[in-house]
Amino acid sequence: MTDNQTKPVKRAALITGASSGMGREFARRLAGLGECDELFLVARRREEMEKLSAELGVPARIVCADLATEEGLAALKDALAEAKPTLSWVISAAGFGVFGRFDEVSDEDVFKMIDLNVKGAVAVTRMAIPYTVRGGHIVELGSGSVFCPLPNFNIYASSKAFILHYSRALREELKHLGISCTVFCPGWVDTGFFSVADKEGDDVHKPPMEKRKPLLKADRCVRGAVKAAKRGRALYTTNWYTKLEHLLSKLLPAPFLIAGWKSMQNKK
Image (cartoon, rainbow, N blue to C red; front, side, top):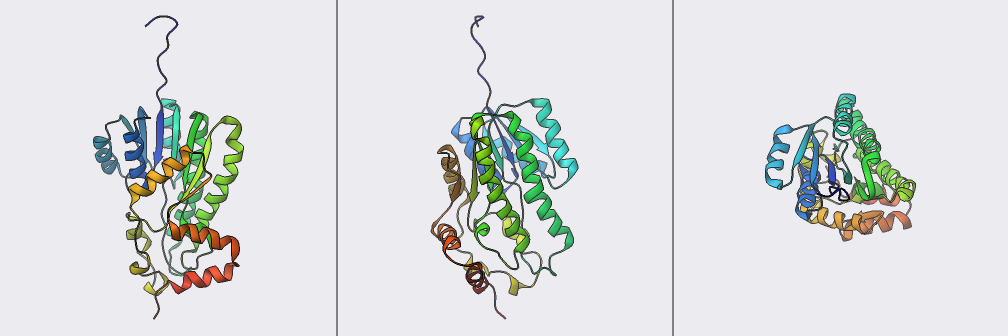
């Protein structure tokens, strides 16, 4: 290599929630595109991330961290400071939700949803921005629930509504850096989400599975989200009913939207 030649910059992707669900699909998608030389996989379950890493065909750094805790956030911050990656993608996909009335969901789950879905997402994004290059993309995982107040899914939906507004505002703040920010709001997706979401509360306070169908395929949703981020879109919704929810949220008062949501729930 001559003096006037330089080594190409290695581009990396940071993906939280990488052990399952949307995070895992984002890792597969970005590895398959061949645009990243390295992936940072972040989640609690090391074994699942090691399995994922073995199938990707792209070098991966595994950061085992619970992003709902200060210790987990510090572990990720230290890993980034040590590696000093050049990030072209930041995927904030860690999160969880629990169905149930206010007196059915435990305090532990309530505050963990807030700590992970809100505090964790913001902390990860803020620590990743200094490593993100011009032309890079940030994708924040929202939800179809952001468009309406949802009784019996209150904390989760509210945390994701925060992410919607945070992402839209952050997008404006990052324009001068040439970094895009897209909030990805899917509907009901076939992931492991429901195994946690359904664990507490009376069944009367959650929609039956037949009303959550057809469940969307995670890989198709992620493929669309990556395409939307590349196009610089501020918001990406997945299918007709999520797009309809978005439209109705602009046209109808909240009580009408809440009544529609409650009509989906189980009846005694």
